[in-house]
Image (cartoon, rainbow, N blue to C red):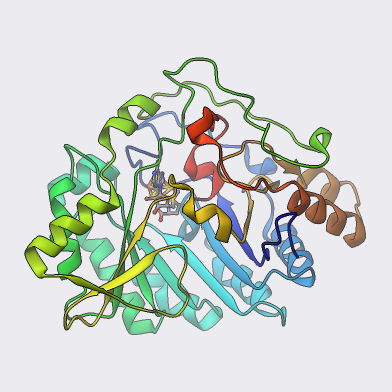
Amino acid sequence: MKDSFGRTIDYLRVSVTDRCNFRCIYCMPEEGYPVSPKDELLTFEEMARLIHIAADLGIAKVRLTGGEPLLRRDLPQLIQQIARHPNITDISCTTNGFLLKSKAQELKDAGLHRVNVSLDTLEPERFQRIARRGALQQVLDGIDAALEAGLQPVKINCVLMKGVNEDEAVAFARLTLDRPLNVRFIELMPIRWNLDETEPMDPIAPLRGNRDLFRLRIAQDDGMLSDLQMRKMVVSCDTAREAIEKELGSLTPAAIPTNGPARNSRVKGAVGTIGFISQISNDLCDRCNRLRLTADGQLRPCLMADGEVDLRTPIRTGASDEELRDLFLQVVAAKPERHYLAEGQKVVGRGMSQLGG
Ligand code: SAM
Ligand code: SF4
C-alpha cells in the first residue's frame, strides 16, 4: 500500500487491550482510568481477521501493544493466528515486562519474533514513582527471560523526564556494554495537549480524502500529567546523548536489524546499541509506514491526528472482507503528510494506552 505521499505502508500497530497493570505517570492517572467496556473491545478473532485483511493489502510487520498486551492471557493464540499469514514477516510486542518472565518462551514458541520492554529507571524507588505499580526486579527478570528465549533483538524503551530520572541516561547506556540490548531513549510526548491549553486547532484537519469517514474523540480531564507539565519535563535526545558521550566516549553509528525510527549508535566496544527517538521533531514523518488499530476497533492513520475510522461496527454487522479492505485503503489515503504540532495542531483524543503507543 502506498499513501498519497508515496510512502509504503507496511506496518500495523495493534492495541490488544486498553487495560494495564501499571499506571505510568505520563500515560495514565493513578486511579479511575476510563477503559472501554469489554464488549467494545475487539475479540481476538476480530483482530486476527482485520490483521489478515491488512496483510493481504501489504502489511508485513505487526506490533502488539496496548495497554499491557501480556494481560491478555490468550495472546499466544493471537500470535499463532497472525503468524499463519504468509505476508507477515515480523511480529513484535511492546510490553512493560512485568509478566514477561513467565511468558517469554511461550510467546516465542507461538511465533513472536522480538520484544520491546519499556523501562524508565533502574532504581526501585523511582520505579514506584514512575510506574506506580509492579516491581523493578520482575521487569529485569523479564528482560533476561526474553534474551534467553531468543526474542531478539530485545529493545529497551526509556523515557527520561526532568526532575524524575534525567540522570539515568548513562546507567541505561551501560546496559549495552556487555549485553545485546538496544536501549532507545524516547522523548516524552505531551500527548494530552488540550488539558491546559487554549482552544486547539481542528485536530483532524491534517487528514486527507474523505473526512466524513472519520470520527473524533475528545478526552476528558482525568488527572494524568497535563500537556504543560509534560512539556516542562521533556529531556531531549541531544541531552541524553551528550551525557552518555561525556561519560562513555563518542558514540559511533551502528546498524541493527529491524531498525525503526531510532538513529542507532554504539559505545566503543559495546555489544549492544543505543537509539534516540524524537517523535516530536518532523524528521520521522517522511519515513512513517504505520497504521494503528485501537483495542476498540478504530483504525487510525496517524498518532498525531485524532481522526479514526470505525471498523468494529462493520465487522459486527456482517461487512465483507472487500468492504473492510476498502476502509483500510481509505484510511491509508487519508494519512497526513506530517504532524502539524508546530503549527498549533493538538492531539486531544486518547492517551497512549488507548492508542497503542
Ligand atoms: N504497556 C506497554 C509498555 O509500556 O510497553 C505497551 C503500551 S505503552 C503505551 C507503549 C510505550 O508508550 C511505552 O514505551 C511508553 O513508555 C510509551 N509512552 C506512553 N506515554 C508516553 C508519552 N506521553 N510520551 C512518550 N512515550 C510514552
Ligand atoms: Fe501501562 Fe505501558 Fe501506559 Fe505504563 S506506558 S501505564 S505500562 S500502557
